[in-house]
Image 1 (cartoon, rainbow, N blue to C red):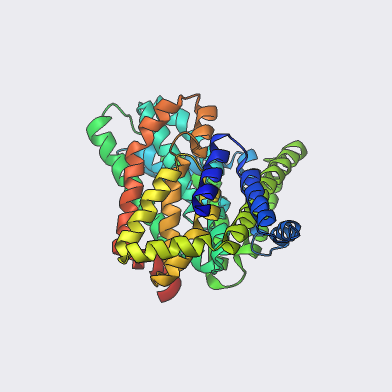
Image 2 (image 1 turned 90 degrees about the horizontal axis):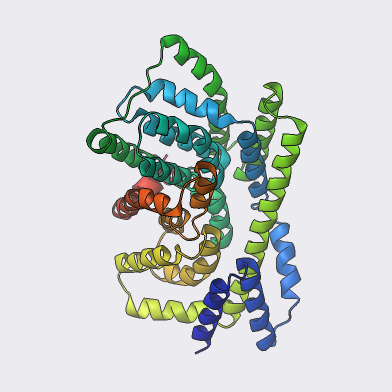
Length: 423
């Protein structure tokens, strides 16, 4: 009965549009007071979240992505990709996915990836005859690569919650990230060939290829330094965030791509987003501790383990749950609310937390592009002046592709586990 009341209270908060951080935190505080538990746990939780080395990477990656966004790096990146693949069938669509993949490898943010690439890719694709729904769909889906291809802010939060290695999560995301990008590219090429034949390709001269490559190479070098250093063990993912911020700052200053006003704006946006993320994490931690003291995760886990003994059935139930909740909750909330509930069941079934984390990340990617709370949808609405219905129609095939990628990772766990544990 207690569990049902808590779940009802949580969803009531969501439907009343109470900010998720305050909704979780207030429910957690009420549970503590009713259970005669010291409310001093609340300020202690806020302090522990702010004083955490792993989460220090979040503002660093956000600052880096905001600097690159303000500096118009998307133009260079898309121009570079377009120069080399623009003449292929669906060339601009391929360039969009490649640009999203590369920017994802240095930003860690889905929203930043979608915003950066869509500003230049959308008008170019529309001009060349691509269907509007398809353009919106591929930009929304391409942006989701920002939370799968490392570095990834949601992966940092996931590792923090389940107390796993951020490095292992990052390395596990490489294989599935490449797989998903390839699936997007294959679909895009087939779509253009069979359903969007009026598209005209971009022809680039040899000299133009050289010029665009010169502009794009620094961005590729940033991605190499970020991922190469992490993979080689030269620095931790948290330190990589600081190094990435320093490199991006030096790049935009040397190239004179960002003035002082733009830098201040990037800093303010980073501060707002960081505070929002940390408050959500703190609220979720308070909620998580409260329900743990009431043994709710343990009781739910016992119910799950008793009724679902098959690992495949458990993963299916998790995926369906996340798909449904993704319509009303954003990515961090899904991680912070659901993982404390799933964690005990995962341990009971001997499921690898890194492998499960990749499946979890793929599923919450869907939440980024499904209305009404998909953050990437809001970005595209603002930048592309599009209706939600147009974007929703465009993302349907890409959501199906994401679900297919989940199926492949389930069937072949080494897609996620080979790089972190075999290489």
